Length: 115
Length: 109
Image (cartoon, helix red, strand yellow):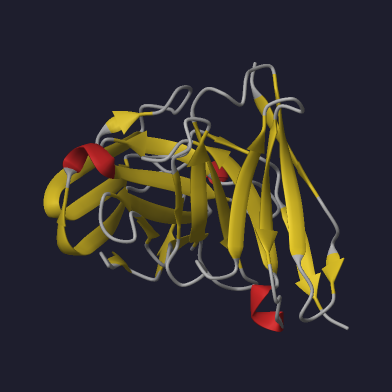
């Protein structure tokens, strides 16, 4: 059974880079599209971007200048980097499988941007 | 951008009642690419419906989805205590390709 485990620092300083990874167990990261989604406190879900091992990548235009999503097949995981973090980036970050809909999710990581 | 507007914002019902949640799109959505999720505090969202009307694996048949074009509906035929949560609709295919509605909170009356 495929499972996703997201991980990363829970606290990031303003202007620094927020970095998270999502490990895929029970399956291969070379299959499927993989997506990052976030939920700021008290708000709804926001799509960040997706990636496929074929090289297809797409980012939310509102974040495009700051976001990088990558895949590491040797570690069977995919990653998110969000540069120049601000308090507005404080959110629970989820990794998920799919692109048209998301049938498998990580448990979510709360990232707080604060000095 | 395709904006999804969910209504009502909050729905107060009792167990056993029928819940009807609406998701309206600012422009036509390909039916195949409309999904619904259930989200409980402290948990990851759970896929309920994809392709507007197909139940995801393990989803009870009291959950059903319908609609096309710009109007979609999630119906819970008889509410169970575990159904009280926030529900989101989501579309794929616009630009940006993925957007979510703002959510409907289903609370116990």
